[in-house]
Image (cartoon, rainbow, N blue to C red; front, side, top):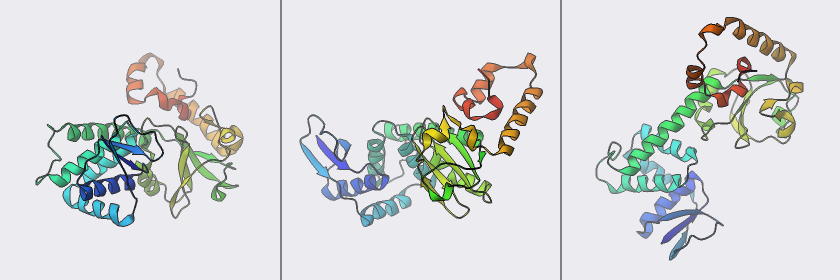
Length: 268
């Protein structure tokens, strides 16, 4: 069995595609550098990451497939599912080997699976667009200098798939005039928008800022605390108890998001 070792980045994956065609050898497994060698390995190759390699593959790929399919491949990469990289690798190799487009060849299991997984990730993206709730912080605790002693809009998420990068452009366009940050507590990273650019961040004192998936009340601004209280009371006043449909509610608003929504506090 031929094994390719690479750095587990998307750029590294494209370099693996480059090497496969250069060597005229297709790996049966893609393994992170430093991982234990799989059983039955007969040959191994270490992929060298170079800009000119993945850029050439990326440019050629853009000429062969549509933007929609490129987005699907990135969605599958962000799914974090087992062997998602090997699936993308096989798909890209098939694209370059085929004289015609394979994008709608759903008899091919890789083509079909890529489409199905990208739909699931896309659904998670839609959930984030609907259920991200920003809280106004008066003094967030973080190692990042941009977030110290500064009023900022802050949201916590924990999507099933790593879909946070897919919503950044939406929030940048919608909230272009305010500083905000969205933090994925499941993966322990987030993104900060400082009115000019978006950059990835981590939280140094995460356990102080976030307690049981809730923002520590001492960091919320007084207006935010008041607004959340009023919003919760408003939603409660609008609710017609006799017409509640809990099953439909959970279908439209999955329960795993409730902990982040002020209007759902106290709901079971």
